[in-house]
Image 1: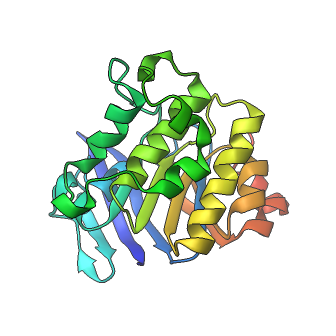
Image 2: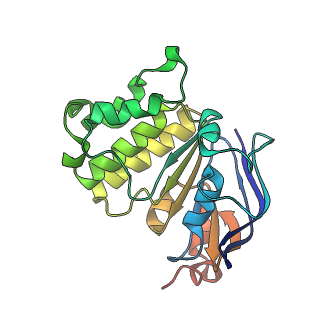
Amino acid sequence: MTLSINSIDLHYGAAQALKSVSLDCKPNRITAVLGRNGVGKSSTLRAITGMNQISAGGIMLDGEMLEKSPPYKRARMGLGYVPQGREIFPLLTVKENLETGYAGLKRADKNIPPYIFELFPVLKSMLGRRGGDLSGGQQQQLAIGRALVTRPKVLVLDEPTEGIQPSIIKDIGRALQFLRDEKSMTILLVEQFLDFCREIADDIYVMDRGEIQHAGVASDLDRPEVRRHLMV
């Protein structure tokens, strides 16, 4: 499933957060959006998922226009979202957190796909533990697992490596590569960890001041004219 973002603008009141942003995310590819803090990366994902309404431009999922669709409809169409900060339910168990992904599914699909536990075995061993008792890295695995329960065709992740220990970052990287290669999933992630993107991404977009400054392949991250937009 292809996700296309065409020249979108987004405003918060009088302030313009996004200026004519365009992205093209293809199946079997991992697309990474990079940039410093406050340049519009998370706003782009919030526009895609319907959390914020765009003021111009278009968003298409396999050719179907999304910009007037509420978030729940986008989820039912196959858009899965892993928000920044994970936003798991701390008082619910791991199993209950995963089951919150059932909301938009048909009765026959209300189960936890076994491959989620193959990707993140720790979740299976902690099904009865409360989400708030998990480490930050385990909570991130839970947040990704919850999104996968919804059977997404496009998976959107906001800084999945933020505050995560290196061993779990590697697990997350392997999981995203599996979803790309074995599940033919379209993956879009916002990141600041350059080495992670260099290792797993196929395509990159670099943002600065609410605009796309560069579009290319992951090896472009080594080019000086690209890196200058990423340096603090």
